[in-house]
Image 1 (cartoon, one colour):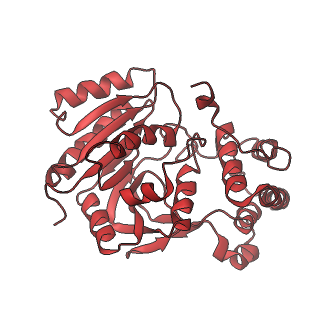
Image 2 (cartoon, helix red, strand yellow):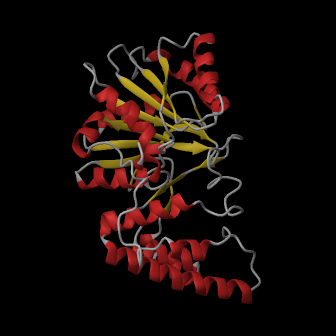
Length: 334
């Protein structure tokens, strides 16, 4: 059993206009955390401006959760890393910093034993710094995936979408399908990640110059470069409804134009971690592969799965002519 008064876990949930989902998630956590009296939950409201903060605060009081859950209001919507860092920074600076930090999306509901499975795994593997859950949809359908780090050849394969090339470049494919046993991976979505405090002590907080997307990818890369490993732990199950705040993923993916911050985050990741030349070459290969895919799609009369304006938007934000590291404009005037 992984519970006990000595288990110091900080759970961080960053909300932006999804108050009802946060409250549902807190109800599931209320059951899950009964075995962890030392655990605390901080909900960071990223300046939703729609009454979310008030509704969440009222639910915490009405449900009697104030002993383990609290709300922190961010002064602005600075994004995922910014919101998480608000809670993590304060906790690490406290007299009793948590041993473990669990990042949870507001559109998640933890299943029974989700935290225990992650804790047990990390305790048994001292160099494992990050462990993530297996996700499932609201109807229980599993979403058993994790990821490799993005790369030049991986971007080419994803853009080209041609079977023989995909098979040839399989070792660089970003998307991985997981089995029923724990597996080491490059990175996992930030929707349910348990991290050792020592990882933050090694690499610092998350990079707030990502507004949304690629920030957890970047953080896992920095952790890997510091000698920590990242693992997918399927025994930890979490229901996740993707894309509730952004629409970039989930049921609406492919129907809407991707926001500018997605392309800025992508460029930041490649320029920061591999340099501008590598980032520019990646964009060139992606563009060539994408144009060949679009030609083949028309000739074969395949359906169009791509978001509107994808080609032009990616090139508009490309490292080919915008080589500086993109910054989070929402924090510039802070």
